[in-house]
Image (tube, rainbow, N blue to C red; front, side):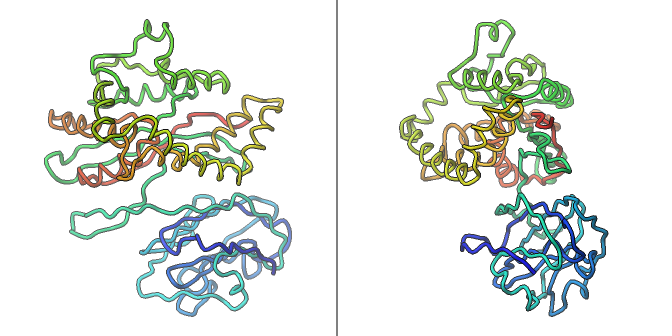
Length: 423
């Protein structure tokens, strides 16, 4: 048996998810044995054990993966990559292989432990037995679980969705940068029966991506959109011909050209009749910063700090080297797209920098507050099928507001390909 351990003390004990890819190059036993914490105890997830096919959790109430309610047998081919995920919450453990659920066990009343052979894997470890194993893309994230009330008066934990991601092909190569459409239903209160979709945006993308969005937008009674401008200002062809709106837009246009993509303001039909402005006016934006005694210099200082943190993550992931390699690539456009898509992984760190000591920022949370005011107004007019089209970085906070302020229940999650990342 051969293994590798993660020894730092920053790994969570609950409310987390791990993902990785692995294959058994040769051999005949388990090629994925991951040992993880669960509260103050530990457990192991096994794939490919007992001669090559056993899947399960060891150990539960003293019974290992071959002899408990998680026992399952599957066929694994040598030299084939498989995608794994394990999610640990206070309620249960869930595991998938190639996005198919293979383990789901409720934790209440159970004790977890380890077989003697893998105790050396504590606190977090990976090992293989009688097999030559390859592992890549092992990562974890903390889950932000929100308690919601159900009609029966019970509470349950809902995992906050990720609103953008890089989708990989079966061979592990990046396939597409995707943005989410997350649905929420209002199950009680004056707006019961209404459905609101949060639609994540990236400001440069494929023409086909924006075409899909334009078709999606037609189905809503009201389509709320972001733009710091007067409510009656619409983006018309004449305005676009005059140039971009701001230095930020100029950067986005430059990014569009470098990546061979289209610009959101050029492709989205903002003149559609159901479009409703749901953002601050320039005066509201400036006044909000003054009222909170904030300013661009102080905000810049906070962003600088978060950017340094993000840069540390970037360097740890070798992003600087990847960028240099992309610039020298024969297919520079594709290589740059892949590197830039990876940068979205640190967006949560960078966006956190906009917030002040109370966790608020004009650029993010307070604009979201204005969008929620417009949502409430449109619901009051009788609209019951509403879309909110905002930059994907805004949607994490909007999710919280929908659950907290409107008692909404999360529903289905759909994905759109914003950037093509495959050959």
